[in-house]
Length: 143
Image 1 (cartoon, rainbow, N blue to C red):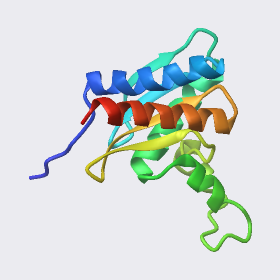
Image 2 (image 1 turned 60 degrees about the horizontal axis):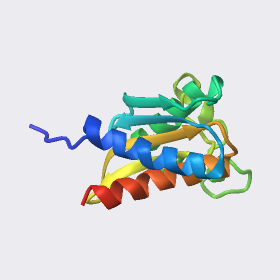
Image 3 (image 1 turned 90 degrees about the horizontal axis):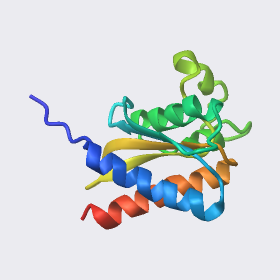
Image 4 (image 1 turned 90 degrees about the vertical axis):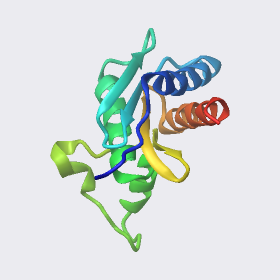
């Protein structure tokens, strides 16, 4: 039998709160998605002004980060021609669900993936900074 560690709703809210604080600081309303370790959505927030198309993009970023156990920006780097781990086209896998745009990060506890956070509505750098802020806020309050 397997024992699976997964984020609770209260932990998901901590991640959302940390990301939202950063989004407010940089002045970009975001869509923020939190998934469990398998990439299934467990919490979501669309800030006032968050882009409509970013609803799905944020969820796909969180799905990718959790299920692949890596940041979505890492896939982007691997899609550059000439990269030794060249993966161009992977974004078409799973019906286009895999995201290669920065803003998705796995959520780790004791080195194990317990979920994913995906952010969308800003530039990839803004999305990544909000996702990282969510992770840091979670780590601060989840010790």
